[in-house]
Image (cartoon, rainbow, N blue to C red; front, side, top):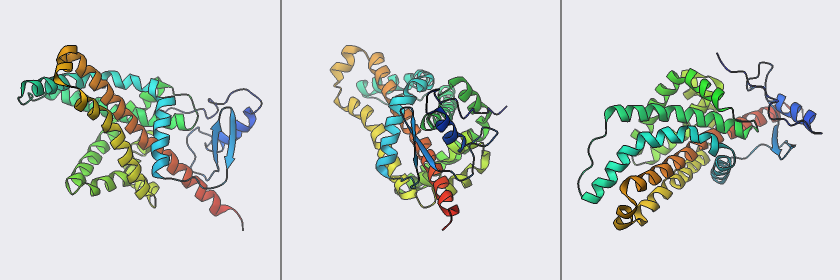
Length: 294
C-alpha cells in the first residue's frame, strides 16, 4: 500500500507553526501526496519559513553545493543502511583487485551471484537515497523503514528503468562521452519520479518534461558531482604505496577504500533527487507566475 505522507510532520510546535503548516500544505493535496498545482516556494531556515516569489535558479554550483550539503547534514546517517550491504557485497572484488595489482596479475572473475546481489541492492539504494534526499530537501524527518517499504513496493519499474537508463548512458559515453552525459541529464529525474510520484514506466517522459530547458546546467552539475565522487577513492589509491598497503593488510586497506567509494557514490546519487526537487520548485513557481493576473 502506498504510504501517505503527513505534510505537517516536520513542523515544530512554536509560534511559527501555523505559518509553516500553511506553507507546507500548499505543496500537498488532501491525500498527502505532492500536489501538481502551482505553488510558491517556501524554504525552511531554522524554525522559520521564508516565502520566495522569484523563480528558483538552477545552476551547476547550486546542484553541486546543495547535494553535498544535504548529504552531509541530513542523509549521511540514514544512508548507512545501504552503505553497509553495498560495502560487504563489493569488498571481495576490491580485495581481489588490490591483491592482483600487488602480485602483478589479472584479478579473478567475480562471482555472478555476488555481482547480481550487488546490482539489486544498488538499485534499492538509488531509490532509497532519492526518497530520503527529497524528504530532507522538503524539511521532513527521514523515516527509514517507511521509505524502504515504498521503494520495495516500486522495485520492478525501478529495476527495469534503471537498467534501461544505465544501458543508454553507457552507450552514450562510448560515443565520445558527451552524449552519455546529455542522456543522463534528460533522464536525471527518472528514479525520483518513480519513487516519489509513482509514475512507473512513464518516468522517462516525465523526466524529459521536467528537465526541458535546464539540461545544460543539469549535465554540468552531474559532471561536477561525478568528478567529486570519483576523486577521493582515486587519490587514496594513487597515494598509497605498496608497502603501506602490505603493512596495514590488504583486507583492511580494501575495506577503507570500499567504504569511501560507497559513501562517495551515495553522495552522487543524492544529486539526482536534489535536481528533481529543484525542477519541481521551478515547475510550480513558473505555473504560479503564469496564473498571476496582470
